[in-house]
Amino acid sequence: MTEFKFAILLVAIIALIIGLTSVAVLLSKGDIKSQWPPFISKCPDEYVYNNSDNKCRPNYPNIFPPNAVPTSTQGKTITTDDNGGQIVNDSSCDVFDPSHRDFEGVQGNCNKKKWADDCGVSWDGVRGNESLCEDI
Image 1 (cartoon, helix red, strand yellow):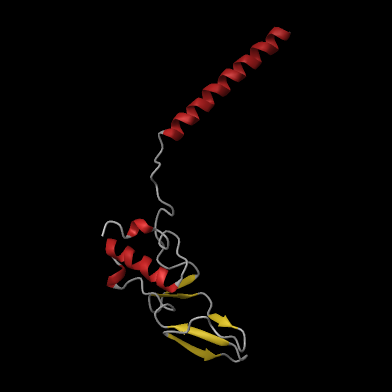
Image 2 (cartoon, helix red, strand yellow):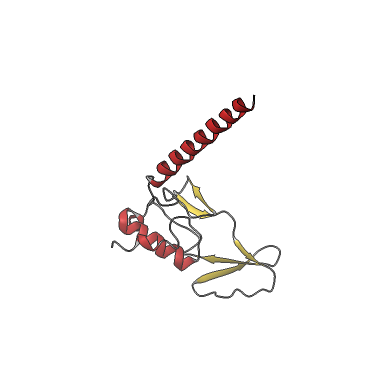
Protein backbone atom coordinates (compact mmCIF):
# COMPACT_ATOMS: atom_id res chain seq x y z
CA MET A 1 0.00 0.00 0.00
CA THR A 2 2.86 2.38 0.66
CA GLU A 3 4.16 1.89 -2.89
CA PHE A 4 0.76 3.03 -4.20
CA LYS A 5 0.83 6.20 -2.03
CA PHE A 6 4.41 6.90 -3.11
CA ALA A 7 3.45 6.53 -6.79
CA ILE A 8 0.49 8.93 -6.36
CA LEU A 9 2.70 11.47 -4.57
CA LEU A 10 5.35 11.21 -7.30
CA VAL A 11 2.79 11.74 -10.08
CA ALA A 12 1.30 14.73 -8.22
CA ILE A 13 4.73 16.36 -7.78
CA ILE A 14 5.60 15.84 -11.46
CA ALA A 15 2.22 17.30 -12.51
CA LEU A 16 2.80 20.33 -10.23
CA ILE A 17 6.24 20.95 -11.70
CA ILE A 18 4.91 20.72 -15.27
CA GLY A 19 1.99 23.03 -14.43
CA LEU A 20 4.17 25.67 -12.76
CA THR A 21 6.65 25.56 -15.63
CA SER A 22 3.83 26.06 -18.14
CA VAL A 23 2.49 29.07 -16.24
CA ALA A 24 5.99 30.59 -15.99
CA VAL A 25 6.54 30.22 -19.75
CA LEU A 26 3.16 31.77 -20.57
CA LEU A 27 3.77 34.72 -18.24
CA SER A 28 7.24 35.35 -19.66
CA LYS A 29 5.86 35.49 -23.22
CA GLY A 30 3.08 37.93 -22.25
CA ASP A 31 2.88 41.58 -23.29
CA ILE A 32 5.04 43.47 -20.81
CA LYS A 33 4.52 46.90 -22.35
CA SER A 34 0.78 47.17 -21.83
CA GLN A 35 -0.37 50.46 -20.32
CA TRP A 36 -2.76 51.01 -17.47
CA PRO A 37 -5.51 51.95 -17.81
CA PRO A 38 -5.99 50.37 -21.24
CA PHE A 39 -8.01 53.40 -22.35
CA ILE A 40 -8.35 57.01 -21.22
CA SER A 41 -11.77 57.87 -19.85
CA LYS A 42 -13.79 60.71 -21.33
CA CYS A 43 -13.83 62.65 -18.05
CA PRO A 44 -11.26 63.07 -15.26
CA ASP A 45 -11.66 61.18 -12.00
CA GLU A 46 -14.48 62.57 -9.82
CA TYR A 47 -15.96 64.42 -12.82
CA VAL A 48 -19.33 63.48 -14.29
CA TYR A 49 -20.28 63.69 -17.97
CA ASN A 50 -23.34 65.88 -18.51
CA ASN A 51 -25.34 64.74 -21.55
CA SER A 52 -27.24 68.03 -21.86
CA ASP A 53 -24.18 70.16 -22.65
CA ASN A 54 -21.66 67.37 -23.46
CA LYS A 55 -19.19 68.55 -20.82
CA CYS A 56 -17.59 67.08 -17.73
CA ARG A 57 -18.21 68.76 -14.41
CA PRO A 58 -16.96 67.98 -10.89
CA ASN A 59 -19.14 65.59 -8.96
CA TYR A 60 -19.11 68.02 -6.03
CA PRO A 61 -17.91 71.63 -5.62
CA ASN A 62 -14.76 72.55 -3.76
CA ILE A 63 -16.30 73.97 -0.57
CA PHE A 64 -14.24 75.66 2.10
CA PRO A 65 -15.52 76.09 5.68
CA PRO A 66 -16.75 79.54 6.76
CA ASN A 67 -13.99 82.17 7.16
CA ALA A 68 -11.43 79.90 5.47
CA VAL A 69 -9.07 81.42 2.95
CA PRO A 70 -8.14 79.25 -0.06
CA THR A 71 -4.42 78.80 -0.63
CA SER A 72 -4.58 80.19 -4.16
CA THR A 73 -7.42 82.27 -5.56
CA GLN A 74 -5.69 83.50 -8.72
CA GLY A 75 -8.07 83.08 -11.66
CA LYS A 76 -10.86 81.78 -9.44
CA THR A 77 -14.23 83.23 -8.53
CA ILE A 78 -15.16 82.94 -4.86
CA THR A 79 -18.81 82.97 -3.85
CA THR A 80 -20.47 82.35 -0.52
CA ASP A 81 -22.97 79.55 -0.08
CA ASP A 82 -26.10 79.65 2.11
CA ASN A 83 -24.16 78.40 5.16
CA GLY A 84 -21.48 81.07 4.96
CA GLY A 85 -18.90 78.75 3.39
CA GLN A 86 -16.87 79.78 0.39
CA ILE A 87 -17.25 78.02 -2.93
CA VAL A 88 -14.30 78.39 -5.25
CA ASN A 89 -15.21 78.30 -8.93
CA ASP A 90 -12.24 78.03 -11.26
CA SER A 91 -13.60 78.78 -14.70
CA SER A 92 -10.85 76.88 -16.48
CA CYS A 93 -10.92 73.84 -14.18
CA ASP A 94 -14.55 73.41 -13.16
CA VAL A 95 -15.66 72.39 -16.67
CA PHE A 96 -13.89 70.06 -19.08
CA ASP A 97 -15.10 69.84 -22.68
CA PRO A 98 -13.96 66.45 -24.07
CA SER A 99 -15.31 67.28 -27.54
CA HIS A 100 -13.13 70.39 -27.90
CA ARG A 101 -10.69 70.08 -30.81
CA ASP A 102 -7.71 70.75 -28.50
CA PHE A 103 -8.37 67.44 -26.75
CA GLU A 104 -8.52 65.19 -29.84
CA GLY A 105 -5.80 62.93 -31.22
CA VAL A 106 -2.24 62.49 -29.98
CA GLN A 107 -1.75 66.19 -29.31
CA GLY A 108 -5.12 66.14 -27.51
CA ASN A 109 -3.89 63.55 -25.01
CA CYS A 110 -0.90 65.77 -24.26
CA ASN A 111 -3.25 68.74 -23.81
CA LYS A 112 -5.41 66.66 -21.44
CA LYS A 113 -2.30 65.92 -19.38
CA LYS A 114 -1.34 69.61 -19.27
CA TRP A 115 -4.91 70.56 -18.27
CA ALA A 116 -5.00 67.92 -15.50
CA ASP A 117 -1.56 68.96 -14.20
CA ASP A 118 -2.44 72.67 -14.24
CA CYS A 119 -5.75 72.11 -12.46
CA GLY A 120 -4.45 69.51 -10.02
CA VAL A 121 -7.13 67.07 -11.19
CA SER A 122 -6.65 63.32 -10.76
CA TRP A 123 -7.07 61.44 -14.04
CA ASP A 124 -5.99 57.81 -14.41
CA GLY A 125 -3.83 57.29 -17.47
CA VAL A 126 -3.38 61.03 -18.08
CA ARG A 127 -1.94 62.86 -15.09
CA GLY A 128 1.62 61.79 -14.43
CA ASN A 129 1.86 59.92 -17.76
CA GLU A 130 4.92 61.56 -19.30
CA SER A 131 4.72 59.37 -22.42
CA LEU A 132 1.67 61.30 -23.67
CA CYS A 133 3.82 64.30 -24.59
CA GLU A 134 7.02 62.49 -25.60
CA ASP A 135 6.10 61.78 -29.23
CA ILE A 136 5.02 65.33 -29.98
